[in-house]
Length: 113
Image (tube, rainbow, N blue to C red):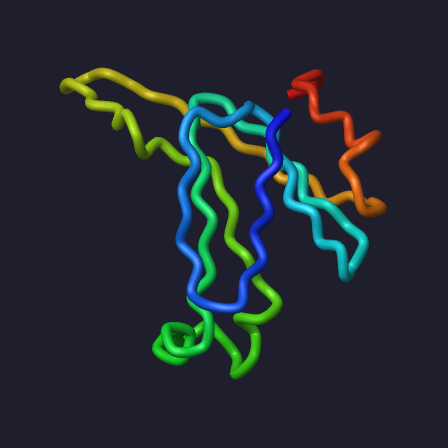
């Protein structure tokens, strides 16, 4: 399993390609983890607008950018091109669980998804 530390103190927009079907975002301060399970979404995008960009976004309060991080499954590196009548499906599930400072016991396998 590979780990990447994302500590945001400025605008963040990062993509990882061909990621695992289950990833976790650990919030050390609040001692919780968001487990993201995905199918048909091989990539992951992580984003935060930080202060300057958030000021132009009507749904952000003054300091709310400091308390948010968008992490989502995506199809970036190899886009899906559909012909008329074709169908594509992607599935994502977010689960927020209490946690310590590690991913032990978070059950990151795909059972039940």
